[in-house]
Length: 194
Image (cartoon, rainbow, N blue to C red):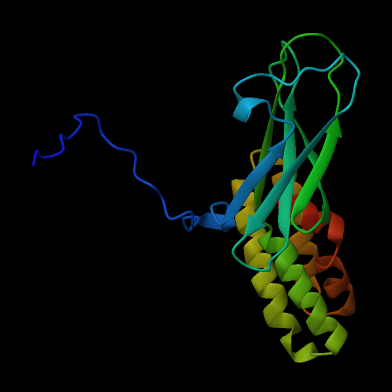
């Protein structure tokens, strides 16, 4: 019996499919079943200028923490990307709609990550509702440290300043009701979670 011949080409290794651990949960998220897509992304999706393009994707993570999912769009002959949030439709399906205003080939990209600030706000909010005031100082300190880390990573100096000011305002009042209210501000949490 003849031995099977080995190919000199390197073989692709199959990954287990599990996301690799990484900072901020950015590698704990998997994006699948993106639509619209033509032949696995090989060909562009065709639309008339001004016609809405609805983008859908299944976005899953390895835990129960809140996710942040954004659709980045770059129109034909444009240099900059524009980000917009995708909306959870239920059962891990996220969607966003956009339209190009002129002919040509544009691009879109989906980014997703575990939103650790929203997760902290959710947990801290539960402690507040339960009246566990002895945990407020520790919870505020934990949240302040997390938001400061996010501020350091923010690329925009204005965002950095807003986040540091936000934390400074709630740290001044220690564990007062005003500090708790400030820390649970959903708009600032959304800014920090980016």
